Length: 252
Image (cartoon, rainbow, N blue to C red; front, side):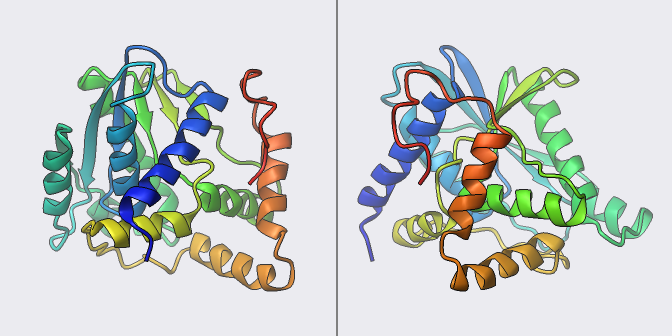
């Protein structure tokens, strides 16, 4: 197993590249990390906590976790990690689980749940004085989102590296654009990060899980498929990268 310091160095390099390519963090930003307790958001918190120590544009860091209302959801590992990183954590109580499964009785609850969680994080971030919300969408999430959109919506779409939200008056950024999920898994294992158990009954049974498995199957015959989809998103959906960094290799 690779050393956690070596893995962190690689994650920092890829994150800094994304931040510079799309001007994600600016001087004086107050960045709120939406932390679910899963491997992706916990790793993003660690990386940004390290990045703020040396990045030339100074920024502050906060963390927000939304308690979904499941009785067996324990966010204490998030609190422990935030304490060790010296990042303030705000836990937002909610009844999202009750709304999605009991009141609305959604057949496909993931979209509504995600929207409610994002709204809670964005609103809380603004209340804390943050102007930026960082989400942990990574390289594989981008590929899956594009495929989901194509297969189930009939359009080629993916979220942008940065999105300005007028209602909540925050800028949503995704610094993990170039980070692969496998790299996150390696870092979590090497660093001994405690991941929060996800009690949601739909975990690993969503359309996203289906598409993730489909991409895995298709990639056995066409190993360049993930890179091709990512490149198509970069060229056809996203804005041009920062001119100062465009000379670097565009795709992984």
